[in-house]
Image (cartoon, rainbow, N blue to C red; front, top):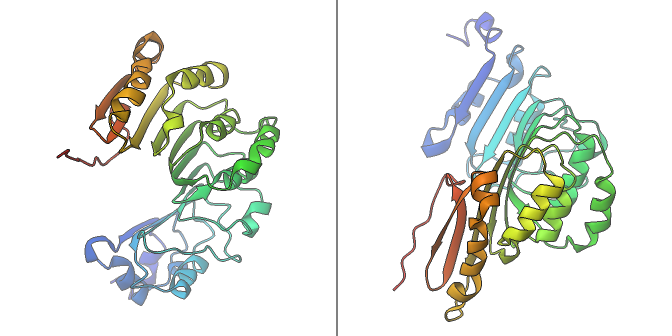
Length: 292
């Protein structure tokens, strides 16, 4: 009916299509329509895009056909689908943006962004610094995988970024492997207006330091009202979990965490791993493991 009556397409303001669980909604939709036929489209959400169904040119065609009036765009790809946003595709005017990642040399990093909510599947400390300078209206930032390797050279740049007074970020969620506390500290010192902070770290023993977090929150995050935290560590050294990490967990049990910030911190451990997290649990999944 919509194909036969073009007037219907002009009244469509939002599309949410999914290829998850073999629904193939995106595949079927683009075989009949181009997104630029929907001149009033404000929100487009595409989930579960799989490289076995689409090539780079197919995704490029979708991006190039986006309506200039779009203010929400979500491109959620499968884990095995690494797609570069083409240089000639500009997304900086979109208010709510969720995409896999950007290359460091993408032209958007030389433009002003009007994005207020941004989700990246993967990014680096260096890219975050550039985004903070480009997206001065950014309020909500989610990072599903923070890449910290080869980042030792950027401490000086982070110090310079701390002098920037235009960062108005209110909510930040970061996940990553082997996070270094000093880099996270530099980064958070650039975001003094944060109200909500979520940190999910794996194999990052530096992050399991309650005293460092207490000092950082008191000195640089004075508006913080909601702090969610998870840190997991694996160590096969005999008795090292109980000896090395349980005392660190105990440091999260004082009045600063329980009374001032009303954060209950829980610990789960086995002979080879430990998981420390705030309540409620900050992730939407939980892996059970058993000791033998």
